[in-house]
Image 1: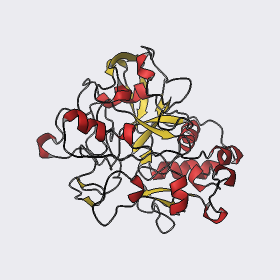
Image 2: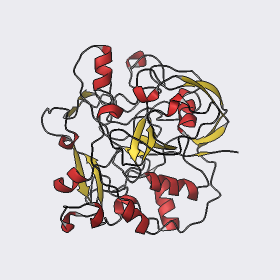
Image 3: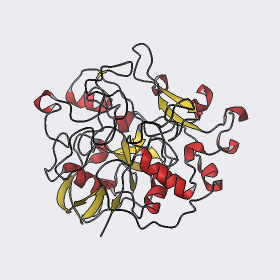
Image 4: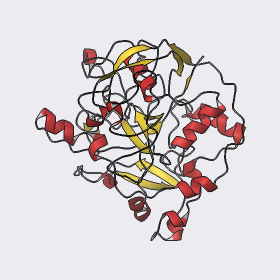
Length: 358
């Protein structure tokens, strides 16, 4: 599996250097988007094209567990991150949003109704992976596997492993299951998987403008979506990483991986886990220069994808960070920051939530 994983980097995870230097240097070195995407990941597009499509029609959808976001005008982006500049004024219309990430139980209902097979569960096409032995081309996904000792942060393969059989049903591999985890966010979902669920549910994925407006909770642009302090009142109010990444998680917030939805306080709109827990797919294609000329009203992302780190990969925006983020490591859970993921990729710190308009 190591050989396969070296060839197949499954996006949705981020890693960064973290020495204590000047603010500018630290930001640059801990900037997950700038430094933490591995190069040379082959596409799984052929396998995706050959796979069966969703058999269910568009669903009517349930409004249960959704909250109304009134819409309005806000400052979008962050001066702290190159691809989130410049701060710019955006107006979005009102919309409904899932108050929490889509759970294992909810995704299981979708699969039962449609017989949908996620990308992580599908066969891989040998043509996409030249030089990799056929017996290594098995379905699976990326699982965070912390090393036993402190390691340099310049090689993510030291803490990520491509695990055969890992999928939404088996988050850590074949010997794990979602039994007892029904209320945890579903993970190992690609963009295609998330979009398919949203269609079935009569919803869609949020634009990143909608996502950021909702995350701000009507409080404006701040350091963290919850405010200016990392630990208000000395308490952790989001599921992120504490300790010496990646080998020593002190679990001060109570969790060493994803937490059940609604484990931390909601924001003023009644939304949970807009910071940390798992990354969330948005419907926008990713370009680092999009904000320079993005529309002022209801932007929906660029017409094409481009990432200078991996020019050939098609990537979509991800938002919110995950349980592996901290101010000493992956800082892109901070307000206004952007994540990015290759369209067919998944990992055990990547999920989603949906929106719906009136």
